[in-house]
Length: 194
Image (cartoon, rainbow, N blue to C red; front, side):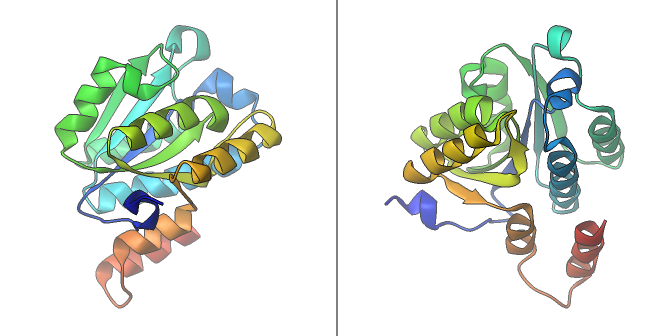
């Protein structure tokens, strides 16, 4: 087992990557609302902790833009000073896109928190590639989905077997904040209850 599987979220080294939560793709997802809600909480947390947020869109001409409720939040966070970047792509694996790789490298972050669609395609391919390249990768199970839940579950099992950390949005948030009794913790409670 590699050290990647033993890591917890480090607020100073994580970047949030939101993969392909797009209009036409999201329409086909049974878990659409759960994934958008969990991803929105992660985005609020990342902004609060000054962690970069990378958002990918797979072939937006065909699949549309990021779903409106998430896009509105990301625009609001960016207007408030959050580091939000959008990368359009054609490759299923984000790491096969030079613009994505360049944007991620520019963050200087070695830990990647992945959320998005679909778990068994873009999330799995990206997680495996990032782990191979030395990143500590955390796939957020409740912030990911596939059209077929069996594909989602098999992908999570496959990622665990490859020493990618499979986690939940609340685990990420509480690990990143680290302790109670602080203004950040109070803000976190607002995000969790949000």
